[in-house]
Image (cartoon, rainbow, N blue to C red; front, top):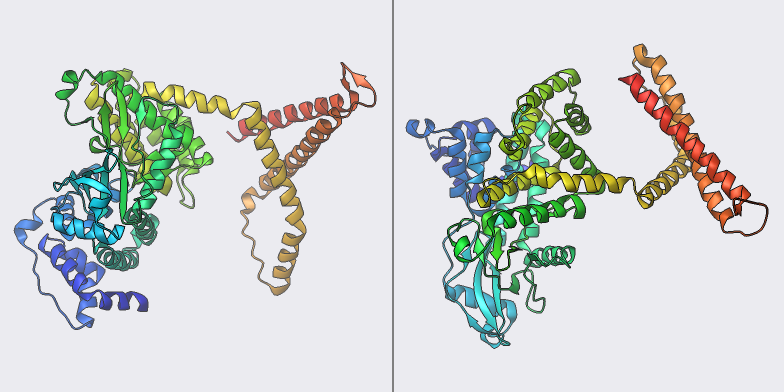
Amino acid sequence: MLKETFTVMRDLPRVREIIAVLVRHGLGNLVNRLGLAKGIERAGDLLHLPGSHEVEQIDPAVRMRKAMEELGPTFIKLGQVLATRVDVFAPDWIAEFEKLQNNVPALPFQTIVAELVDILGADPHTIFSEIDPEPVGSASIAQVHRARLADGEDVVLKIRRPGIIPKIEADLRILHHIASLLEFEFPETRRYQPVKITEEFGKSLRRELNLSSEARNQDRFIQNFAGHAEIDIPRIHWAYTSERMNVQSWMGGLIGNDMGAFEDAGLDRQLLASRGADAVLKMVLIDGYFHADPHPGNVKFLPGNRIGFLDFGMVGRLPHPRRDQIVDLLAALAQRDEHGILDVLMEWTGDTVVDEDKLAADIADFMFNYENLPLKDISFGMLLNDVAAIMREHEITLPADLTLLFKALITLEGLGRQLDPDFQMVQHLTPFVREVIISRYKPQTLLKKGKDSLLEGFGLLAGLPRDIGKLIKQARRGNLRIDLDLKRLESFGAQITRSANRLTMGIVTGCLIIGSSIVMTVKAGPTLFGMPALGFLGFLVAFINSLWLVFSIWVSSKEER
């Protein structure tokens, strides 16, 4: 805590300002519970800012949102991140966090020109023949101006606000201190890992402050959608792009909140909703790399019913194992399969102790509410929110890499229904989910998984002597601790035996496949059906072993149920 105390002293003026804002919005009780006022008192200051009784009558979520708005960019960004935590906050809090906007008063054009001179090391008019003094947008981190290159191409200049880094770094230090106090003073919050959330938020915000990082994200999306003529993403001009400025091609078009202009422009709103959904689902389920904030301001609708995506500062990444879990959950939701939902949620419990029977009963009740509803009347966002409510009830924390995904899918459905009132997210999910599930059983996929499992098995065997040696050393020192549930010891031993047998059989089968593949390339020796006999027999034995493995696993799973 000594480090945290130094943080408070170092950033004392900002801490005082934060406390004043929180108390002014009727959150003085939180300040006292966290001990923030005591920190200032020890530093030589004492704030006497009584909360207004009238203010305290306002809903707490509204008060917190207003306080964050007043505290500026870092807290606004934090609120936007918290809006993705549907597993932590109730819908009324999420709704308030979603209202937090990045829009701030624009900097004077003279300040922008001076910043351009410093970034480019030259008069910007030697590179840009025109720069519009009126900003296209003014956000908490950057200001955007339209410009024209010397060759006549229209571009966009996204310029980071000068002097913003020290302010944000101070806020991040204070937030880390507040998160530490939160875990200490409110033990029930530890399962949500406030310190870890603030650390991850700090990393994400620092990446967003680096405008060249956003440009690299944008380039990757351009590569992922190469050959998709219906999707447009602005091209980055790397010659002028840096950590402090992002230069990209200008994109016109309509935005999602200008519905009246669609007919005048000859655009098909139903087709646009369909293409937008397919694009985002491709990002999520096929590429594993998705735009995490597809709200109406970040999506443009272009001539020819094309769709353009903007602002790649916030992106999500999904590794293959997580994608498989998401596909299983989406398939279960689409098919109203309560057992499938239960299986995925149990995978996400981690170290949390969950009453599986009660969880299963709650999922069954949840699915019953949708049992007789026609597909067109089911909101996918409502389904996800109901799943999140069940997770909150059972204290299951959504894995960090999925918080952005849930939010993106809910936002996507909202935009789709804004374009087309008959838009059905489930209809678009089904073909993508089917494609991913089919791809799991393609020969090349199975071969890769088999090879990976074989290498993992060999690695396990190779490391076994070392691990046994460590156990023996721990036993000699008296440090070996084994926790056993004696009631289940017999079944546990049987499970170990079965697992060992399957592992051995799997390794033998893998060796047979590899050895037979090598033999097949040799033309000498007896043949069978025109193939080397030893290779054919090896594959046959491997096939029989595989059938035995699959059957034994299936039988065991049936017995466990």
